Image (cartoon, rainbow, N blue to C red; front, side, top):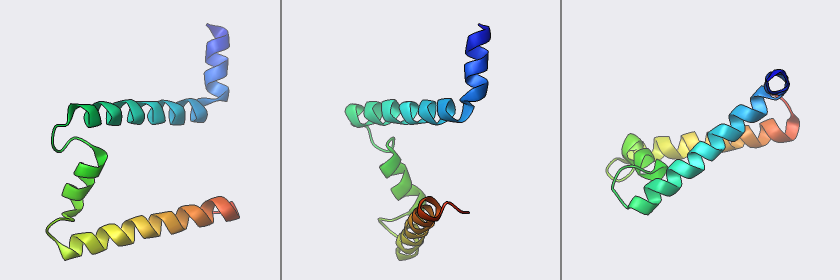
Length: 81
């Protein structure tokens, strides 16, 4: 047990990011397989930003994704921010 605790203390970030990624993959796979409406990330994103009915929502979504992508690209390549 002591070894597990030491491992978790040393690798907390890796364990949490991996757990989040696994949860997301499993959940999204289940939601894609059940074919119900409004349960996938894409469907909820479209609803949140109202991309089907609002030009402002489409614009906001575009700015958010493009801005986030640009920031992440710079963040990874320059190792800052």
